[in-house]
Amino acid sequence: MARVRPALVCCVCGSVLLLALALAGSLSAASSGWTAAGTLAAGDDPVFAGNGISVAPGGNGVIAWTDYPGAARFATFSGSRTLRRAGYTGRPLLFPNAQGDLLALAGGRAVVVGAEPSTTTRFSLAAQELGPGTAVSKPQLLGGQDNREADAAVMAAAANGRLAVLGDTPDNAVLSVAAPRARFGTPVVISPAGTLTEGGGEAPATALAVAVDDAGDVLAAWVRNGVLEARWRDADGRLGPLQQIAPVDSQVWLAAALSANGTAALVWETQEDNSPARPGPATSATTIAAATAPLDGRFATPTQLDSFPATTPLYGTANAAISATPVVGVVFSGEDPVVAWTGHAGAVFTIRTADVDNPGSSEQTLSDPTQTAILGSLVATPGGGAILAWSSQAQMSGQTEIETAQSAAGAAFAPAQTLPGNDYVFSFYSDPVVVAVDPRGGTAWLAALALVPEHRANVFKLYLYREPAP
Image 1 (spheres, rainbow, N blue to C red):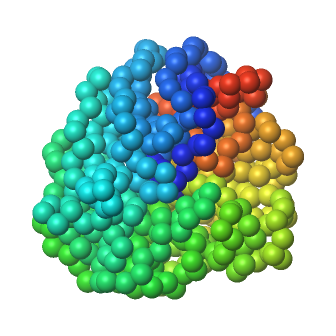
Image 2: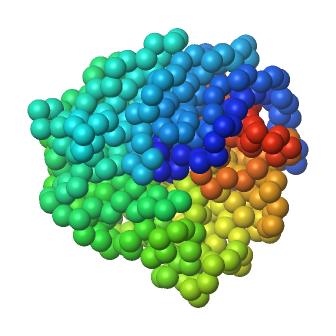
Image 3: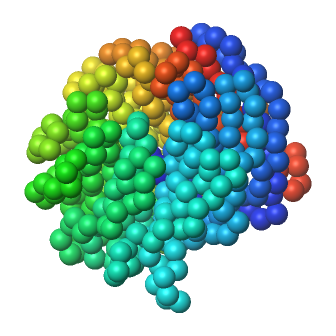
């Protein structure tokens, strides 16, 4: 999720969430063939968290999100465009001011991980499975006998459904892995004791990232005592040596990915922002960097991809404090690590991308430089390409557009396409766009949250779009 972060739960109360299904025709670089096809009532105050949509081979999928104050909901859809409400946890698992994650999985299932009360004063890492159908499992505490207290967590899924959770306890990073359709194992402490960065404010910087492959190899990364660190866990459960990668500032956003051959990529964006009520001014330069490593190997010297300067200590549209998530993303286009990040130009944030192995000549700014943009999703396609989606908003306007760009294997991204509809409203509180691709047929699905402005009751819609494979 760039993972449910319950601290991003929308605080608009009394809202009604609608689900809308849309079908797309073929796309060109100049125009879009997306069309709407219906709505479905589904809950209040929606927040996507992490990978909020997934589709199985053949086109059946699931969308998952959280409402205020952190209960998880999910809906299923099929290749025939049937969309229906499927399930609801009925009570919060993820609490405001804690940070958790949510993944939609193949087979109409979703998994949510967050803080579960283990005593009246302690919150332990817990996971809960939603689906298939209306099934909702009991939460599984991920602490074994000691029930380590958790402050934040991120989660990743391999193509075969294997899961990895990286949790942030007060003093250590802990890792738990689950085989496909199995329960999580007891978390293993993988970092030395120290002060772990958690971030906060409207764009929480969890400073955690995890990736897992089908075999069970896991890459975990965190920030301890102001330094980005990483560690491998091999498929047999053995931990590799601790790696210190780079010093970072107090606000850090991380993303991690593994290629089919086990190559790892990390990307991060970091800045200082000491304002207790964000967005405030960024009080340091903001830097974006990435590093790669072979399977179970050491990371190379990081490559700086971008930077933008600090701003004067004033609030306003030109300040450079990041105020919405996700901030960075990374996938492998074949064996090429492709990253996306949030840039800053004048008074707007922009969506930028590059190949880590060739950053100079491959860098692109994909969003409109006259509008501020929020990164949504960066996903790989079966043919070795990638899809990048984001929302953008003209300055001093409440209307937001949803845009996508696509690349073929080894190629640059094509020009952005704007999806139809103009009832989207910009929100700092949620991941605005999530994307999934059918691993067999290549059909792409996109879900986007929108607040319909003409409704006094703050009516939300969740749009689901479909793009046939090229």
